[in-house]
Length: 306
Image 1 (cartoon, helix red, strand yellow):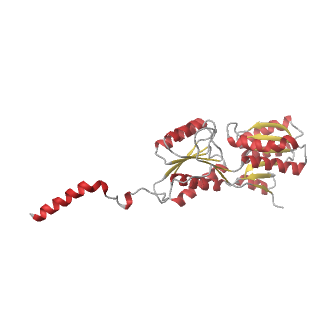
Image 2 (spheres, helix red, strand yellow; image 1 turned 90 degrees about the vertical axis):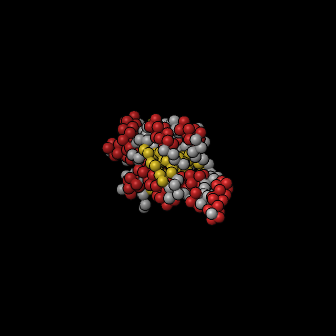
Image 3 (tube, rainbow, N blue to C red; image 1 turned 45 degrees about the vertical axis):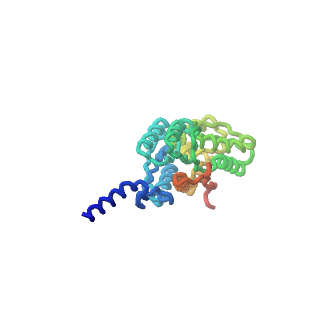
């Protein structure tokens, strides 16, 4: 009987003091940067572009290394679809969002929705116009545009007649690469025509064909990305002309074209590094650390090796 009373007393004491007992180790909050069970959503503008495929590869490789689950969605260059995609990712309970916007203005609504749910947002390659973004991981697009103009001046001299193929009108990369290019081009080059080709190779080909007809004296082309530059090269070769073209990104097709003596050069980014840095930034934010609002990835001008 005494044993029974002792057991009952012990159970009663445990019930009374249970709220103050420490939880077991497996149930304690994660305060040591352990990425176990973290789920991050990645929304890409398009996977129909080698640059963004490489960016995705960088994200997934770093996530695997860190033990983070990644949910990847392709917006297919449709800003409305991207907003829906990001909403779906939030519904799936992601801890953070990595967003490569189709349109920097259009994505703002989704960024603000994430802010209201306290889901941190990191943008890659392109920024968002509104809403709180913890960090933009990107190359210095302004500097890259300036590097392209500087090369054309060095190669052809001041006053050379240049055509500019612009990216998607709403993308921050378009604005920034154009700004950097024109900082030098407006005083040392003659930009005789510029037109958007939406970062697309086929559109780059079509737009370049039309611009060549209207601007027979063109001496060089600057394209805001390699895909448009590769399309422009096709149009130039079909016309029988020999016009230097500088692209932007450093994707595999562009590098192969440079080696083959077709594309003149590219302002090469490091998309895999951008992806890796973005995952690390998201993890740092989730661990309660402060990250820099702009995390840069180095650029370099790539030309055919002599």
